[in-house]
Image (cartoon, rainbow, N blue to C red; front, side):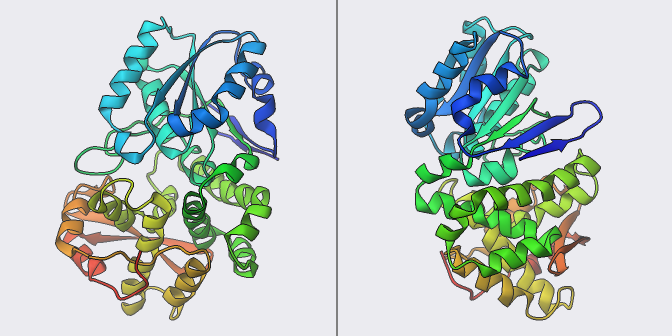
Length: 360
């Protein structure tokens, strides 16, 4: 399967195929001339796939240097980026050379940010190995690292030259890591794809989704592809992709990066914002219950304890979607359709009132 992200300045393909990692060298040689490559990965992914990828790239004539850093959201920061910049300089990477991200969302976001800023920008490729990265973070050109104040506060817009998705690598993911990626697929269904929602509803558990992973990855990627092509820089309908994220990012930061995983936090955010919006008549009655039932099927949380409204609000104030004393929130009046609402930051407090749903 191939999806074209048909952007005016830098169009690229998302290539989705089982077993495609074994031909990664051929894929890269079809996109880049022979050059130096820094392969950016974490210690977990490198142990599983690093040797295979390096071997395939070298077989095609690329000179490869591996930059490995400790796995985890806590390491997605400027300190790690600086180490990567220095590593690239030590290998004498020029603007004609490239970076490949091999890993989950942390690796992809960090590697892309480093590529977009090293020597004012060099080209890069994404090879996402987690479900969250395959259906969300590897696509669309958002790069970034976390600060002490907020998730992804420091970042750029920079598009990759291509994205290679091999659903087979999901079989090596820990169960929790796989399930958290389903949170992003549920979000895509809610904001733009009623058929995807219906397919998810027919599944019994996460294991069944894994068996049909190629379909669900393709469907979620298509939702994001359409929104990115229409709104590359997040000024309009691309904001639909933020459903659940304003509160979700706050939960991630407040709980401590890595304690609540991204897809889990998005699940919590979707339920929390839907509960309040439904009580205000902004979403259809029963929507929160329907979302909660689907999330429960995939063992995704709907809240976390303890719940600190004040602390979460302080984090939301620093959210990238805030504009002065206003912030955009995304709601889903009905399955498959999203809307954007501008509210005051003070009104945001109402959306952070503690819930009584299933906790993490």
